Image (spheres, rainbow, N blue to C red):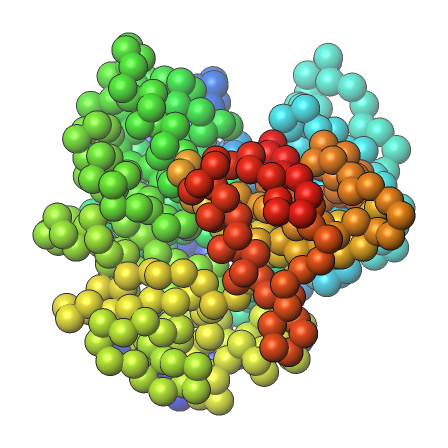
Length: 565
């Protein structure tokens, strides 16, 4: 196992192989098998529909790309930071690196210098792959700046142009067009399937994301078993709406599960219903994965005369944040689809509702684990099992659940039990028939539309403002996003508290991703304290919830003012 990663114990690994969960097939080899099976069938379709890439062409593209990377000195064991939008290049880059034995480190398109710098330091990545620009942001400028600040970063590759096009500008200083990374296919040593294939990112409670090592064996199994549960086949058409770097759209079953099944993957660059509905109609999409925030948008659009034929869409998966029952019950009738509730984590465990579940199970639970090898416990604060129906923290281990974060021994000692169960931080209860119902989080995060925002991280940046003496961040209930980011501010002595717009500009300048910025500010003279003289965040959360209930989201604080975005 890669240095800094925690392997599965030998006896568990042997059990997973004997059960057939792990088949010893590296992901790069699987693409070749899919190309042999599905040949000239379309595999990937760009958002504009102009690029329609067959399985055979994708396989050949990845071979040439792998050779090109190797020719530039990228090799087995090297980490490569991949920050790409939903385009065919994302899949090609990943599989080319899988074949090399190089390790993609996924970075969300919304990340900026704060998060990217952290990932480069933690991973030691030697290469960074970005779009020229996306959503109005110049990723080239960021990437070149990062290269200057991180000596180990030798290469910056940029997508968005074709070197053969005479109108393509020449690569700039410090970066190369990805289209120039090309080479004649050559035999490459195949990585061991038990080794790390790539890194997903944690979305939890620490200030910045941790790296989650996923092996070829465990991720191939995850995408295969979830594709089976969803009944994917060659007629399946998956719309990738969420960022492809998320575990949910990448392999639950998502992109990989669809390719495993011989279906087509359609990329969407936006989750806006007008764009997605057009893609569904044009490509006859059958399945997609959404978070509750997007569900709200789609339901609102479906109530209008949008003029699109959505009849091909059979299943909408919803996960990543709590789906309230009143919203869940609208999805089937208003979108004309079957709802599949999904609970999961990039760290591993996935639970799905099934096609033959009762309406009560689908509307009111997050389903059952996808694998017979999944082990779960629900425990109290002292790791004692709670009775069925009781609420406790979810602990889990299994054939696709990590045994430790990358280069995080101190955190791993707290995050795992002595016998290797992962402490998820999720508060759940089990039904009498084994379904999981998610009730909340143990730790201090705001789940804003499916994005997990660390309160501690945002507080640290707020506290750097010269007009802020102290900051506390709590979740503010929101009917659309589920939760918004509410910042309580104690002004610095003799100063006035900065307005919300000022704080947002300040945090943007510090490189914070947009979804982490406060949505609302409450100014107070002092924070309530617990008996241990710690900030009583429960009291703050109750305060903002009560103000919303009585006077609305923009209510002023008892000893100051409130501002809503």
